[in-house]
Structures are given as C-alpha cells and as structure tokens.
Length: 256
Length: 257
Ligand SMILES: N[C@@H](CCC(=O)N[C@@H](CS)C(=O)NCC(=O)O)C(=O)O
Image (cartoon, rainbow over all chains, first blue to last red; front, side):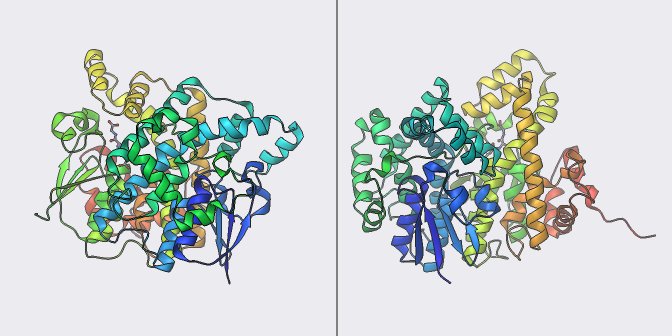
C-alpha cells in the first residue's frame, strides 16, 4: 500500500516534509490541502497523534492506515525507511542535529508562526463570516490549537510577544552566522537545513533587519532554495508565493 | 580522550531522571554529581562553567558536554552498547519521538507548572527575601527567571493553572488510551518513551489521585508498576536524597498473606 502525504503550501512544516520526500526518493501520493482554511480537520486522514500534534497545522503522512505528524520526525522517518543520508551517523553529530532542530522547533517556529500568521492569515480570517469560522474551529480536536486559531482571527498579538518573536528570529540568524560550516549548518546537508529553511524563508520579508548583516545566512538560504528537492517542493505551490502562506503553528512556550 | 561519563543531576525525577534511568538501563557506569536544585546549585559558577544555561541535567562524556535530557538519552542509546532503547522499525521510532516531544513540550510543562506552584515555591519561599532576590538575579535564562519568580512570589494566575490542569487531564487519558493498545507506550518494546514517561508520570496516582488510579487508569498503573520493577529503575531511584523518591513505593506489590 502506498503512503499518502497530505500537505499544505510548501512553507513551514509542509516544506520540510515535501523536500525530505524528494530527497529520499520515497513514494507517496501527494494530496494538497489548504491549511489556511483548516482543511486538515475535514479532508485528511487523522488520528490522535495528528489531532494533538503540537506543531499545529503541519502535514500528515499516512502509512498503512497510521496517520503521522510532526515535520522533523516525519523527515527522520522517511530518511530511516529509505537510508536517505539526511542525518549524521555519528552519535555526537546526531545529538548536535537534534539540539539544533529542537531550538528551531521550540523557539524559532513558534515565533515565525506568530509573525507569519499576523501578516498573512489574520486578514484572511477577518474576512470570513462568523458562521464559516465557527464551523472551521468546531472541527479542531485540540482545544489549545483551536484557541490559537481564535487568537489569529481576533488579531491578538501582544507587543511583548511580537518583540520576543522578532528577537527569536534575530537569534536564529545570529546562530546561523556562527554555525554554518562550509555549505550547510552541520557541515553535511541534513534535516536541520530543511527545517531551518522552512521556518525562516518567510521571515526575510517580515523581519528584514535580522538578515541585513548576515551574508553567510543569506548565501545559505540561496543554496537550500537551489536544491532539487526544495525546488520540486516549491513548484507545487498553487499561488506561487508559498512564503506568504501561514496557518496556526506551535504555541509560544507557556512555562519554562 | 577519556571515555568517562559524569552526570550532573538532581533527584531522579522529571528531566534529571531521564538520563539517569537511560544510563542505568544501558549498564553505563557514571560519576554522579548531585546538584541541589532547591539550593540553586545549578546557577553557581562551578556548574555554569559546565552548562551556561544553568539547567539540569548535563552530561560529560570524555571532554564533551551534552545537555537537554531527551537528546542526552538518544545520545546514550546510540553511543553505548547495551540493550537498544530505540526500536528498529522506523515507524515505531517515529512514535517514540512523537510521544517524547508531546511529553517534553506539552504535558511536562503543565505538570511542572503545577508542581512548582504547590511544591517548589513553598519549599523555598520562607528564606531570606534578599537572598532569594539575589538568587533570581543569577539565573541565566529569562524563561527560568520568570518561572522562579512566579514560584517564589506565587504569581500564578488562575487561568494558567486551570489550563495546566486541563492538559494534565487530557494527557492522562491519552496515555491510558495508548497503553491499552500496546504493551509499552510507543511500541511493543521498552523504549526511551517509557523512560521519559515514567519520569513524568510515576507520581501521578499521588498527585492526581482522582484522575489516575486502579479504576480509572488501570493501564497506566500497570505500566508504571512494570517499569518500577525493572532493576535499573530500582537502582536509579536509590540515588535520590530527599523524600520525593519514596513516592515510588506505591508500586510495591502487596505481599499475599
Ligand atoms: N529542556 C531541558 C530543561 C532542563 C530544565 O529546565 N531542568 C529543570 C529541572 S527539571 C531545571 O534545571 N530547573 C532549575 C532552574 O530552573 O533553575 C531538559 O530537558 O533538559
């Protein structure tokens, strides 16, 4: 039985997984969803792990009836089923990749989603009728994800969180400037490059000051964008501007 | 480089307990360096020289420093001989990772917020206010500074505690459901997800008695008891120094008369 990948516009977590699929040569039926309309909650095959995924509106990979979520782990799954070479074999290098991905997942992705949704999704949701919006959130099983949708529609963006989110993007770029080793973040090309690119590419327009003085990061962004797998993924965009497509993502951490 | 392993940890509990138990399961001997969290040992210069973030645990392997409890566990599993704590099947591995992230980033912070409001705050609050303020100022991570401030001055708002309690309830039902389907949390073999989960949930029947007990969550109780009975768990909990570790005694099976 072939796998099925339900994905949104090639941005954020959907971009990571689409590109990992093309990198590894794994096969899956591609089913495009409009994540900005909450289509994952009515058109995709889901299960508890998808409904409760703290990544928010990410892609879903269905294998033998099991619906899986969380972009980094899906990329690892594809890599480990296909021997794709997207992860270092050495345990210490692997730890470094996991630490980097965790920084992106925990600190950078919530910030990027906050800023991206504010710029691109809030206006769309404001234009929606109350009825249509309530129908959309009514289908969401996770109460805190539903609450993030409401916050986006109502435009709840406290100044302190906005500033903190921009600071997180600046921090990510500062760390990239120091970290990039040769062509890629960890020397060899890994899932860390995909996940980092997927969340940061859309920030170049939204937090331009973070990238202004970052020649190493800008060159790296160009190299990732030029990879066959990423080009193939970006070419799937129905609008041609995937970096402007955002849906509620992970929450900004509430404790610790 | 020497291959010596040194672990800086507090009680076998939450994040400290994860690498302690993983090392014990793998049979890797390590030098234990106890960091008394309630005495703010983790913000002292000696420790900040190891981990500038001022959080525990941290592990030295030879001259390398490793941090982040779950990432340390994955490293321990990959770097040392001993029984595999990650299943071989890629989909099972995905499930192990999914559960660990869900626990680390969604469920554990809710448990932790409640624990800090009812236990950590009251445990240190009575100390000299000037000393406490100075201790807070020494905390390197802004997020942790906020946490300590809230715990010490009891600044939690009702809504956030209620939200944490809601998440604990949802998490318990998800654990029970997963454990009714499989012998272990994420696959048919004991894995890092179980090591992680035990550290999060071992005190559940005491801290959330109405939500987790033999009647409402039989699968969770049985799972915790099976983990408690493993020699590595017994050895790890014997390293605790405070009353906290005694909580595992609830898993002793009653001796039949
Ligand atoms: N994500 C880190 C978190 C480490 C962490 O925050 N540990 C807590 C103890 S469980 C700590 O160090 N608290 C002491 C403090 O905040 O001062 C990990 O899993 O290792």
